[in-house]
Image 1: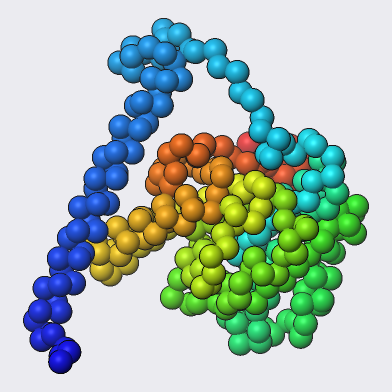
Image 2: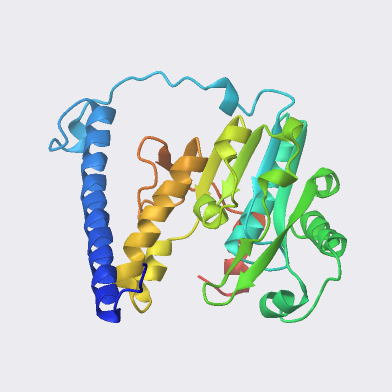
Length: 299
């Protein structure tokens, strides 16, 4: 006969579980520091204690795999993200511009921008008011923004925009998918996927054996947010941070062929797959405003 364990036993079990997770977290963190040194040794071919300017860099020939080559004409690219304009957050603005530039600068046959659709109550929380009654209305705004604000009229007209159902969670300040994103993508169009925040997109993965890597020929994950910093600052962070750390590694490693971190301060997700690169760039009007600063009295 099954009986519920006494509360004291439950607390002890939870405590042991938390200690195990914390131990694994610190083991992995220590391993990451070792990985950084070994990568440096491989890169230069000389011991890491020799100052970098005096170390000999190895000559390695980088071959581009056909599955990841976006210069091949006729590719189909999906940019999948966790936020959508008019919410002006990094995971809405930058992926929208990325999709537009991929359409403009590569010989791709088609580029799709996949963004969340929020119902009335969530729109009020995110936008302040209920702005749109249907995804088509929000799509008009995104296209107008691309044409006017980004000055990318061709992309505004030719970019494919696909909405998925999402919910805004106030506790995390984030939007999460509430349906199977992979099921929305036709098999014949599943070629290249760029997942903006792949860990975030897949924290609540549907009950399916299908993964992004198994459906797409090439999957790139772009890491925007330091979720460990958020979790460690919350109450109970000593317990939640190791959990977030491990889940992030599992999700990113399982779903991505390549991982791009915007900053080196972010955790290690998949040591053999990741690089650090600011792939966002800087918008032209930002530089133009800087050029005009002296004319309006700013030094």
